Structure formats: structure tokens, C-alpha cells
Image 1 (cartoon, rainbow, N blue to C red):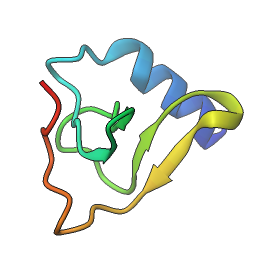
Image 2: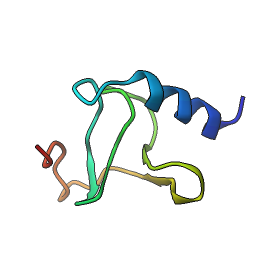
Image 3: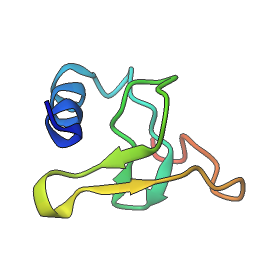
Image 4: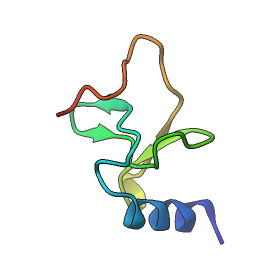
Length: 63
């Protein structure tokens, strides 16, 4: 299974309340489960983003 397929499954089975929500931009926040290993990810297909957490970008900024 590719990493994109794994991420699609994580996104499908992770509720908003249980998602990491590390902020990439006002439109993109991490959809992976809280406490995940590795990079943050958001979006689907060719729009998918992956990023490392930046200390000056606090998580949970979106309500």
C-alpha cells in the first residue's frame, strides 16, 4: 500500500475531533490522527501537502 493510500485511509477514519490539526495555512491543517509519527499531511491527490512541524506555527489554531 502506498503512503498516499495509507493517508487516504487515515483521513477517512479520523474525525475532526481526533485529528492533529497542526496548521500549515488557514486552508490546510493536518488531517492525520493526533499523536501520529512522521510528517503532517493534508489534502488529496495532486493537492496533498506534507510538512514538518515548525515551532513558530502552533497547532490547533483553527476552531
